[in-house]
Length: 464
Ligand SMILES: [Zn+2]
Image (cartoon, rainbow, N blue to C red):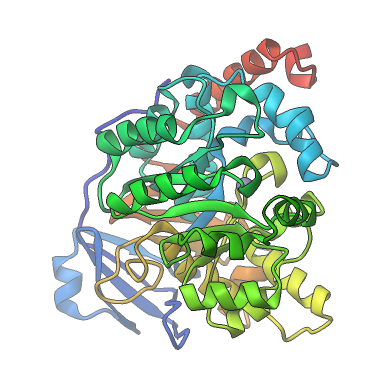
């Protein structure tokens, strides 16, 4: 694996100016034209028109954004990066069949060597797709080195990265089952090696209600809280899973979490499609975060999450792609557009969600799922410098009447020109600065072919 460690670019005093600045602040102001000044890993100032002379003089790096929009980096609040190799393998199946027929049989052959290029490719895809922060619900553990491979890839490429160590202690495929004790032991080792406040965080992520026993839930949540970290879990993704919980525990998913006393602002509930009014109220009251994954929900025909009702209740909603096995991309621009369109058609109301709502969720909701609400996701003094420059001079985008509309309905990863994470320029003029992308793709191709050969799964990949 060629993901280099310790070669991150320096954090300069950087002045970005000339284009529109989409702040995603409380007023959703667009500074047009505007400028942003970054010092170290922080935004120190932003304004309209020309930047003040002293800032022009002190800047070590200037980035001209004429014809572009600068926006805060987005957070992909729920994905499974190891699934990068699984995209397109098992289209057209509902969730539980998709798991049993495709994901599990191949997953049990994923070791650290094969997983490393999948993590790297997934992280590069996220960066190119506008996600400067990635929440990876990582539940492959046949090799104790897998978590290290994931964190190493994130460290070397430069994304902001949360590894939620996924576990299930029952009803799951044997090779991927972990007791609470084992999950805590493995996650603790990862936490100790990699967790730092800003760039890389490690917490525990109970996989699914039907795979997690009550006692194990309590233990892992307590451990994560002891680290000052949260809990990430799939919740009410499909109707059948809610029925299963009702049958077994006599409770829907959210009352069950509440009964375990684990529902609080540090908890992120992925999907949350099949929630009733009482559950929405409980989430609002507890301050828990929802990671909405509209493309995956459509792909698996899981259902339509009640996003407008969530937001009316003041629930923090973040946006997510979900794993590439059920999307099949890591493209936050596609997620932005799907979020708005799905809500409009489902509610037969063209006003129900608008571009600024989607940007607010993707940029401002995400940091709450990461565990650092308010730290980044907005262009304002004191925020972490995670920024994306989108070139609006494209036949697919121009002319631009409203910048936020153009970002949500027109822009795509091909329009991303520059990406800054934690004050470091990770993509400049469409080129990655930290890693050799061609090498990552070559490694990924070889590892994916080897994986599906080992798993004895036939596809175009194994026959060529
Ligand atoms: Zn998921």
